[in-house]
Amino acid sequence: MNKRIKTLLLTIAFSFTIFQFKVNAATSLNTPRINIDSNKEWTVKFNNTLNASTVNSSNITVVDEDNNNIPVSVTLGKDETTVFVSPKVSGYDPGENYYLIVGKGVKSALNQELTSPVKLKFTIGNKYSDGTSYSDLPNIVSNKFKYQPLLSSQKQGFILSSTGGQDVQYRIFVTANNPSDKEDFQDMTGGYISSKNGEITCNKTLSAGTEGQKYKAIIYIKRAGTEGAHRDINTDYDNYFVDYFRCVDKLDVQDSSYYKDYDISLLDIADTQLKTAPVFVETNAFNNSASSNQIKYYLDPDNFLDGYGKYQFLKLNYSDGITADSLNTFLQDKGIFKDCGQTFIDAAKDNNISVSYLVSHAMLETGNGTSILANGGTKDSNGNYIYGKPVYNFFGIGAVDSDPNGAGTKKAYDEGWFTIKDGIEGGASWIASKYINNPTYKQDTVYKMRWNPDKPGEHEYATDISWAYKQISNIMNGIESLSSSGETLNFEIPRYK
Image (cartoon, rainbow, N blue to C red; front, side, top):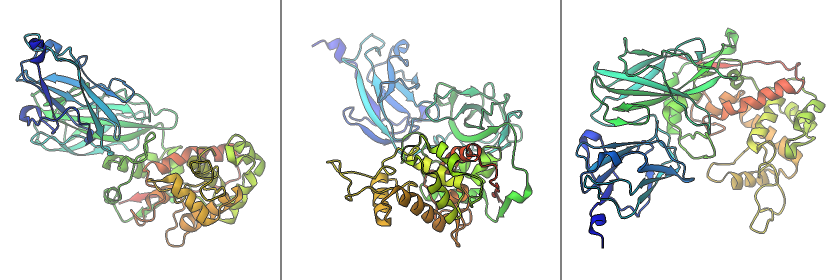
């Protein structure tokens, strides 16, 4: 056996480690690691001093299930036998599988190498994060945005509270936060700077896009005059904080009659919501727990006071104006809903529900008429409907996250929704009686259906924190495209104390 090759060995630390205060815990590389924190920093320990030139992101990599390289930071420890693999900017994606690979290119100071590459599989837990919490280092406790929403002519201000006293500095990067898009972070402070009276002001303006743009902000903190204990591809840092804000071109809701005051604070509602374990459906995962700052972003009405966002607050009661012909034109390419225009109008009128809303809700829940629940429900292994006949659930009623198709099919069967007409009329009646026209809850906007500001955490239609916002596109499409100029539009916007 080649003794030269055999002599370079490694272990990988499973416990969270901090550069200056490392605790090493060896693990078996043959055992996949599950429920890993999204901010996990791996520690790779070798038995010999390393050749520093071989410790880099080419020889030590992290890849996803599709073998795509994940941009991590690889740094050599002060003892030159330890390597730290820091996570990508703002952490790994919840619920996803990754592989940490230590290649043969890593060599000792005497040019010894590994017998073969070493691979460790790890799975991130189903939970989004608002940042790191490395102990004994300065940390950001809270952030408040100076402008909410931000106008495209303004430079955002961050009002920060942190540990570490006055001897800390901040650096801020932002990226347009769009599902499935590559994150392209901009440096908004031009390096680390000190706060002025607890505030950091960006040195750039941002684009509002076409319908308002959501931004993710990464606020880094470190001790002034000291290199940060950790690093990602943006910068070194001691800890970082993740927050979200929206940029728009102009505000479009200024009529005071549109507002309703509530004797509760936004933070109190957010804390209550967090206890209900809501999810954030950003891509295709339906079970990733939302973070506190993600909840606050979608909960805060001030983020959505522009001409697009305001439709979360549209009153959902029936109004004349949409014709069957115009609606059928809209539904022509919407799968099972083709030629169902009059059925939607009759169901909306009978149940005092906005036609635009009723149609938009059905489009969102069924993928424009193509989902399993919209096309007869679930089938058994032989291709037969599980209840012996097709059933139709167009509004996701009873479709719990753990088994949406199975539970949604059962709900439709129990309710007797055996025809397309049954599904539309029955679903409309259920939504009207349970939410929009319910005498107790009166949840007559999609915002109130999701958040129920009168009784936060109770009787809420969806677990996805972005559900109300996702309704907007189809509601607007209905209003703008269905010859509905006669529809009267009224709004009700919560204003918290």
